[in-house]
Amino acid sequence: MDDNVGSAGAADDDGCIKEQDRLLPIANVGRIMKQTLPPNAKISKEAKETMQECVSEFISFVTSEASEKCKKERRKTVNGDDICWAMGTLGFDDYTGPLRRYLQRYREIEGDRVNQEKASNSNTEDKEEQSSYGTNQQRNQAVDPTLSRFNFIDRSNSSSSRPFN
Image (cartoon, rainbow, N blue to C red; front, side):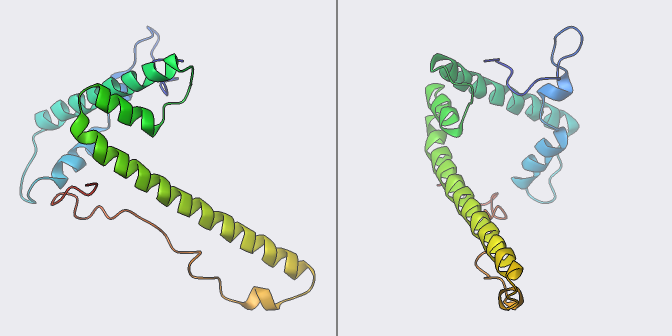
């Protein structure tokens, strides 16, 4: 397994990774920083660039540790549990609990979404099958509103509280 998972095509002729491929987009970093500051606060370009370097390095640090675990276990895919394990191993124990809870909630939501898609697809296939036999009744019925409901995580209050406690 490659240490630079996902960096295919990101290297230049010398084999070095380009800075733009190594760092998170500065606009995204600035947006995240603004969320925790008062509305009238300003952030200097230097502060954004410094934070961009720090968070990119942090992500590489944690991912590298998780990747090493996967190599030892002869696996090619780093998953969320590996990231949680790496955070704990590297001494970020205060973050592993909230991260595990977030991961569990994410998986529940994704499972619900997949189940809804399956139900919706099954519903569509049933409708097509029935309409091919000449019944128009099913076509004229409204779609069950529970199938079209979207699940989402409310991040609007993320600056005033820790959402994953």
